[in-house]
Image (cartoon, rainbow, N blue to C red; front, side, top):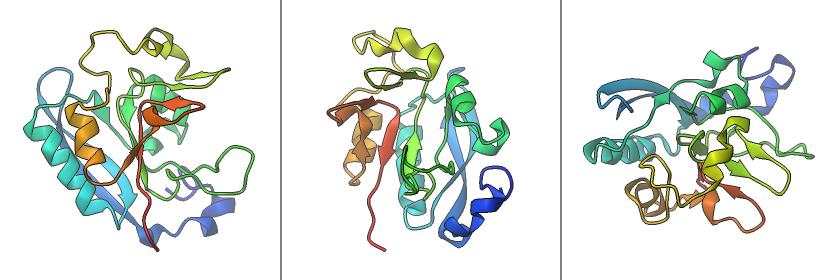
Length: 177
């Protein structure tokens, strides 16, 4: 990860001892079982396993779960490929503050179908059709669905509930140090 998803010049900003590597079993879009990889904060690792176990038991489909390193640590490439991921080193735009992803406290699920939308941007860029949240597609996260409930009942926040922008793929957790 050092030199890839954690830049060498900023490796001191991320304590890798606070991160856990997980193998996640999930149902793919092909209706088959798959095993993916994810890195999360160790304080939420057990909870993330519980969430994905619940989703697995409900046969909730996720296209893929790969480490951001497989995309050269390029979040946009990962999103465009509809990759579900958690850890990704980055700072909050226009700040020196690490994002929830850089702390392993945020997970993006099926990002192509659940884009990040602001007044000026849609990410991933190939997700414009999915800005229409009324499309009847089972991969679109909606308030009250199985995926939403699996995260929310454990105290995670959903970016689809944000006011000035919408990040439909994004779930994050606040923890006490």
